[in-house]
Amino acid sequence: MLKGIPFPKTHNIEDIIALLPPGSRPKLTEKDQDKLTEYATVTRYPGDYEPISLDEAKKAVRIARRVRRQIRKLLPKPALSSRKK
Image (cartoon, rainbow, N blue to C red):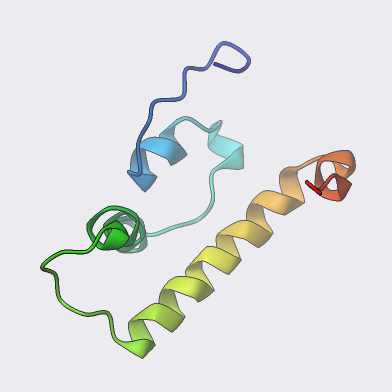
């Protein structure tokens, strides 16, 4: 829990975004949220699922990078400069 907000163990992108204040939420369509959740859950472990095409994988990486840029703009500078060694 941070700042009184409990953080559940989940890979559901929609649930995670809902924890953020409205002005801090990344701009993702429902379709993008569903796809990222699927990649974070279904494909996380070996199993019986449709292979992801190279085009799909590239699109997912573009979405993730866009979200990362959006979130980094909201973080304080000291949070961006500290890195684990």
